[in-house]
Structure formats: C-alpha cells, structure tokens
Amino acid sequence: MAKAEQIKALIRCHAEGDDARFYAVAMQVAAQAARTGHGNFAGELRDLVDKAKAESKAAATHARRPIALAEPRGELAGLLTVTYPKTRIADMALSEALHDRLDRVIREQRQRERLRSHGFAPLRKLLLIGPPGTGKTMTASALSGEMGLPLFTIQLDGLITKFMGETAAKLRLVFEAIANTRGVYLFDEFDALGSERGSGSDVGEIRRVLNSFLQFLEQDDSESLVIGATNHVGLLDRALFRRFDGVFEYDLPSPDIAAEVMQARLGLLDTSGIDWAEAAKASEGLSHADLTRACEQAAKDALLNDTTVLETGGLVTALGERRAMRP
Image (cartoon, rainbow, N blue to C red):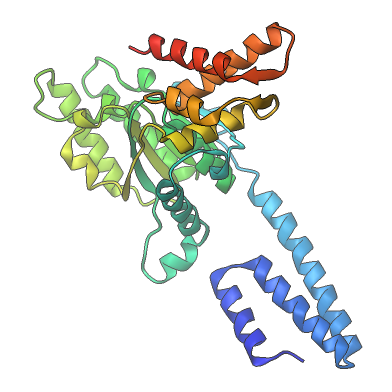
C-alpha cells in the first residue's frame, strides 16, 4: 500500500497543481499495491488515473479554445485585431534571466486562483522595453500561445484622434473589452500613448489621454494580461512604471544567443560548412529580427544556386548587408 512519503507527495502535487507528477505518484502506488497482492485495488487505481487523465485532457483542450470578441461591432472593430498564436516561450532565443521571468508570469497565471485565494494578484501588467527586433512583440504572442488565450493588438492609429475627448472614450472601450474578454492585450509602440507629460511637443489632449490611460490601468483588475511594448523607453512618463507589475528589458543578442537564433532559422539546411563562432562575431549589433532576415537571405541565395549547403562566407555576407540596411 501507499507509503507515507507517497501520500505526502500526492498532497504536495495536488496543492501545486502538478497533475503530471500527481498521476505518476498514483501509478507508483498502484504498482506497489499489485506487488503486495492487492490486485483489485491496483486495477481500480489505474482505472481512476486513466479516467482522470482523459477528463483532464478533454478539459484542457476545451480551455485552450479561447472565446474571442465575435466580430467586434462599431468603433471597437477598428481598435482591436485578434490572432491565436501558437508560439511558445521555448521557441524564443532570450537570455536565461528573461526566460525565467517570463516563465514566472506563466506559472502565476496558471495558478492565479490559488494566489488570489491567499490575497495575492498574479503578474499581469507587463512593460516590455528595448531596441526594435529583440522579441517584445513575439513575447506577447508566446504568452498568448502558452496560455491558450487570444492576442488582441490595439490599433493605435484607430485609437488616437485629433478630436478632444474622443481618444479617451475609445480607450475606455478597450479597457471594457479587457474586463469582459480574457486575453493578452498588446499596446505596441506604447510611447505613442505614454509619452512624458510636459515634454516640448506635448499638447493638452495627449496629457488627458495619458491621464486617462493611467487611471484605466490602475483601476483594471480583470483576468486579462495587459502588455505595453516600446522601443523608446526614454519617452515614457515616469508615472507609468509603477502602474505595471513588472518591467522586462530586452537587449541585442549576445554571441551565444545570436548563434542560437541563426541555427534555429537554418535548421532545415546543411550548416556543416558554417563556422558559427565567425558568424556570431559578424552578427554583433544586429537584433533577433535582423539575424532572422539575414539567415533567410543566405538560405535563399544557396537554394537559388542549387545547393542546400550553406557556407560561412554566404552567411557573413548576408549579415553585413543587413547591417548596412540599418538606420
């Protein structure tokens, strides 16, 4: 029969929501029961585990089928676009520290009810800052994909208008959607909304929009994730930072991460002819997006020359051309 350590392990797994480990320990109990002559109990326990796994899988499949804003009507239709990404955090080449912080967001979201029952709120308002092409927008897609939630991208060109009060009214519609439909909501190019009050180019309407955004964000206690992403952190109003649960900083890839990005993008071709150390050195100063596009160019050049074997020279040339295109 079950040992004391197995019973304690079962309780810990249940408390932590670790279903896979819970079922594994339960099967260990069943195996031990069978060895000690309790065949009927062992069989019943195995059947219960199999049934629970099947029900859990069916429930998870249903939960991953997000309910989107069904054809948003009126003004809302021009304010949000909806996608259903399949990206995962593991697909991204980021620093270990950033991976760990994003994994923490996902863990807290998956156990949000447990946290709330003890008076704590999960991380859900995130500010992503860093140079263009370093993975900020892809992070929103990955969080969406990890949790099986729709990704709503706010269309700033539809949100910001020249008419006094109209932008704040549209912003209210967006936050009503955030409250009514759980999802990941991305404010990309966030500095267009959050630029510092009192700046030289500031006008009264922009100050009112920022004040409205700060108020809506502070009052929001929904189940959705709200993500702001910007390439221009220096333009943001200081008051914004304390409204977010966490600020995630993205940098240009290190040589090791650059090599990882390039290897992943060229994985379907023969890269035995590439000196990755030389390629990584040639990639210095390029973003993740730059690396991806340079790899695509090098791969297409090879295919157009009737070969699937890539050479260091071809990749280094593509990286150099990509660097020359940067502003």
